[in-house]
Length: 264
Image 1 (cartoon, rainbow, N blue to C red):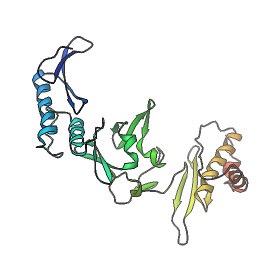
Image 2 (image 1 turned 90 degrees about the horizontal axis):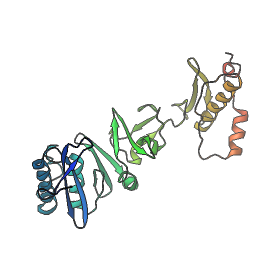
Image 3 (image 1 turned 45 degrees about the vertical axis):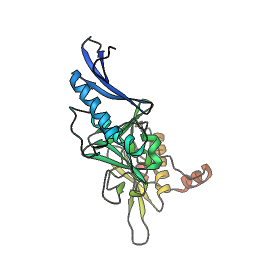
């Protein structure tokens, strides 16, 4: 690449068209600032980056717009300046948590226990779904809390403070963790209803514990397959229970006769 204005380098795309890359080095750290169609824009971005880091006249809320600097770089530079730590993702540290700036209008809050993960995993969005790329797969960030992809907010889990951008562990209450299981509040204690979908939803049964309800779903799958149903169901993995306990519960669980005797 040929060097042009300070902090700006000329590069070529695959079609041989020219574009300009801006970058700087700060305290021994080389930082890429983005790509631009015009050299003048790349140089302005470089000058702004130097101003952020050295003159400290800007605040994180003062973002001037994409035409001068990509938003994620704005966050990264302010965190580096204010907290002395470089992250390649748009994270800003607070004393007891950190913020992930997905956009100006979407700021996510996480516990510091998740800092290592999100400093190396870029969060993306599709509608209201937030996910990261992990080993080539798109992984919903809710999976880190044991919340399945099919879970419905407000039914299977909810945010205690009503802020759906606050992903601190203490703010997420998981109600239903398993396929086919939903909790029903009761006067004395909740019960758990298990349903499975064949041509429509069929009730498997009502159970006193979430583990029993999850195992009942698995038993229903086994009975349906035994009866010739070839639909592929995802069984529940029941945590904190030994294979012996699982087998004992499985053997005595009552299942709706419609499922046990289901015919094609």
